Amino acid sequence: DDTSPDATYRRGILECTYGENDGERRLIRDSTDAGVITLVTPLPVAPLATDTYALMVGCDRLKATCNAHDNLARFRGCLYIPLSTVLQ
Image (cartoon, rainbow, N blue to C red; front, top):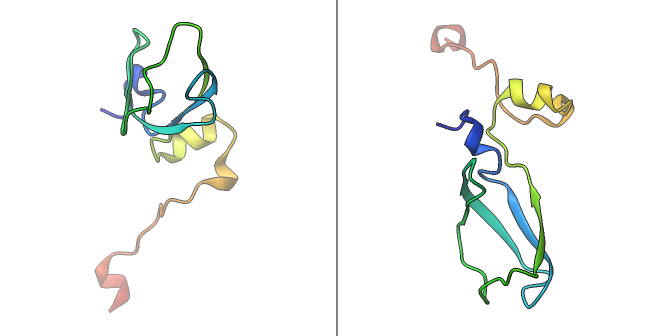
């Protein structure tokens, strides 16, 4: 469920900022309230406790979420798709 609280970083980005993976960026497959992040593709080197990283919140592709983050101007969804009867 993309709207669950633990999905905050789903489809987000993890960027390594210090350590052997410095500069690496990965798409986040999933995240949990316990702080577990699952990446789509693994990092080249296993991270150490001293490594640092930045997490960017994912996009659940909902207008309400864009609006909550004051980002509605960048929303790229198609909210109003005409019915087939309108196109005839």
